[in-house]
Every structure is written in structure tokens, then in C-alpha cells.
Length: 116
Length: 112
Image 1 (cartoon, each protein chain N blue to C red):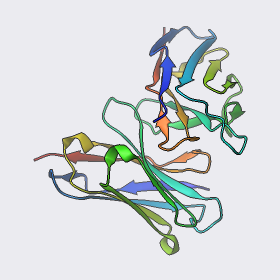
Image 2: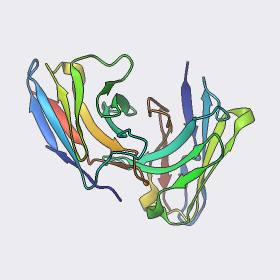
Image 3: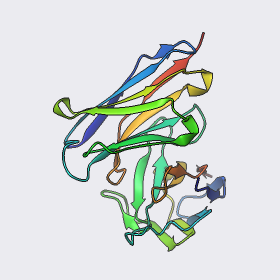
């Protein structure tokens, strides 16, 4: 059974670095063809793909966030991570991780609020 | 970036009515590997997106067969043949052929 669960700080201040963790089970990020993505959704708005990491450590980023994103993984502990630097209020959103091989499994999402 | 234009933005339907949602892409979504990475999702209120359709027309596991997807190149359609109350929510198309992956702006399905 595949499950994913996001965790994060809840609230942080502008200019800080946001660190998110996706803990998953039912698959391994060391298996050929497996990738995990981060997607976010501001309240009442649409979905935005942020980044993807794959089994062989290839990575893709949304250029709209320029160089603020870093995605990584810990294969041994079945986790994927996303860091966003220099956050501001526009980064307030629900952040999801999803099994990208088909996008058929998503986490429940974690709400992140950027506020001074 | 690939722009996906979804229409309509709001759809009001009665139970049992058949409806369609259009998703038009700013460029062809046919990948060099022969696949077209076009997906459809339903996001019910307060829930994560749920995949309905993958690779244009393949029904996701556990998804009722009243949902169907069609299209090619730049024009795609999601059809619901006989809307049920549980179908209310926002429908999104998404493309994963071209980086960055992009989503349509969503179609809100309301039940009359």
C-alpha cells in the first residue's frame, strides 16, 4: 500500500528558509523509474508543480521559482525533501508530495503560512 | 511554459446529466517516446487531488467508468457520463510532457 505524508514548520517568517519532508511507504526511491514531485496550492487557487526527484538522482525544477528550490532524497529512510529559500507571503500554500510515476498517489498536504 | 486552457471554468449539472470539460494546450503534448502525458484530476473540497485519467484516456484504478478521456496533440476532453453527487469539486488537467509540468486553471463542477 502506497502512502505519502508531508511535514513542515507550519508558520515561518519572510526571508526564512522553508524545509519540507515527504515520508512515504509502499515504494522505494531507489527503484528504477520511480520519481517523487512537490506541488503546491495557495488557498482557493490552482496547482503549481515545483520540483521532481528520481531514483537515479536526476532533478527538475520549476524555473518560475528561479534558484530558490532544492530537492533531495534519503533513500534509506524513504523520504524526499524540498527547501525553498527567501520565502515571502506568496509562498503561503498547501504543499503536496506525489508519486510522480503516474501521479496516482498524493499526500494529504501540509499547510505552510509565511507571515511576519 | 506550456499553457493549458480549461473550459468552462464553472459547470453546473444535474444528477444524471452528461458533461464535458475541455483542455487545450499551447503546444503538442505528444512526447518523443510516443506517449502523451496528459492527466485529469478531481479535487474534492478539503481533499488532495485524485487522479482520474492518465495518458489521455486510461482510467485510473478504482475510478468509475462514467469518467472517460479523449483527445490528441493539443486538444483533450474529459467526459462524465451521468454526473453523480460525489463528482462535485474542481477538475484539473495537467501535462508532464514538457518541463515545467503545468496544470490547467481548473473547472468547478457544481451540482444543481
